[in-house]
Image (cartoon, rainbow, N blue to C red; front, side, top):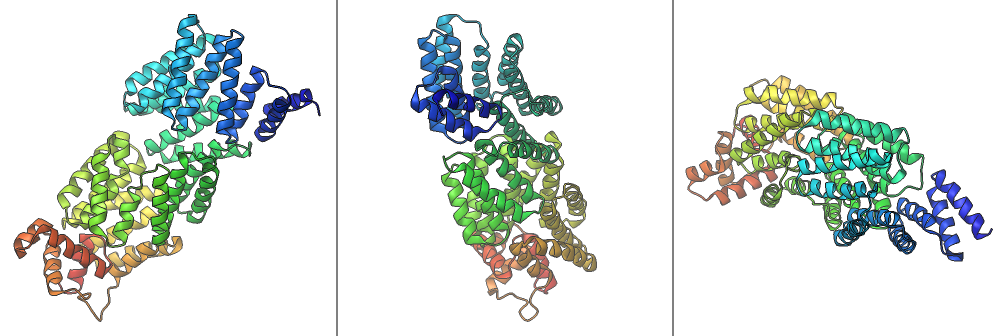
Length: 544
């Protein structure tokens, strides 16, 4: 086959979206005779979509220089744009900024009025999003869309429209922002945009749905991304990210074996060459190991996720809690929340924060965090987040011995999680409902709630939750004191009376740190994780 034959077949493969064949044939033809700039651009696209980041960057660079030598500044700038975009996407911000600066200088020197100015506006707009300036980003995306419309560039118009939607969502204009995202996705599904931009929009829209805790849309668009990727089996970057999103949704929906399978596949696809999303894939593996009680494997996976750039909280702090390492769990989650800005990012940490600081006996801090979570949920108006906030508020009220006020919140959380098909979270809500009913003296109804939760935990294989529930619902009769020391029994009695650690310390003339250690020991010996559960145990066994 001649070089001309290889080029012809490579171009046809590209049109069929057979990316590996296109990349192989373009590469083979290039080995026989240097490719022209248009074919170098095609090679760059095929290499990028099949995971060949370095080969793609080399092809864009060569195309850039060939265009410059031929005096085609605008096409040279387009190549520089893609280099800036892909380097930034890979986390190599300095190299990306260098190519962006070169592209701007070339256009300014040439004085060209061209569509490439709109693409450079996209870089500026994305930068404003990440720097916390959504209003400025919205304006820049709007300018880019106007340039795209003027030059009839569907890629740029659709990309910028989606960007405006994300900027509006960051400003709290949810309905208007979502409408723009859906409009952009209609163009993507109609095949009106190129593959690189379609993949970017798919992943970005799903990310936006998760920021809004819009589970229905996240499921819908993740399924669409899955179908799009299945039609192009050679894809690497978007397929890996699709697998991560599918793992997250499968976990929430209780399909844990499927979630693990997708997380493993995602990590494999995204680790060679290394991509930032690999950390998210490994983090999902860690979450599944933790929920199933595979604690050593969870610890190792959280550490691996951290090396890939994914912060290990809140999962690692919750793992510490399961292991009875209350002080370590509390220190980690407090630090993570203190370091985190932005309501969406904080909302992902606050539920674990409430759970852990309640276990440590700090009801006041838990109440403050639950109130913040409720405010975020009200602003975003997403059922998933509203359920999480109601559960957190119910837990705080229960810890304060106000079961009557906690019960409607916990029932609301259970109802919302049921409607979202989130069985694990719904089962946890039933456990808390059972504890509230027990506080109110309705042991028979409490046992019904415990039984329903127990069955879900058994089906899912949620070993730590089964163990905690067993300690709550059926304590050992032979040893009602749970092997506690006299001082630990003293602390338990005061905790059961609703006292905080500070109040217990004052009552017993010991330090708060000592009280916290006793509470941690009590939880470990009794297999409990909340003060409410410890209080229920004390009352049930005549220790209060």
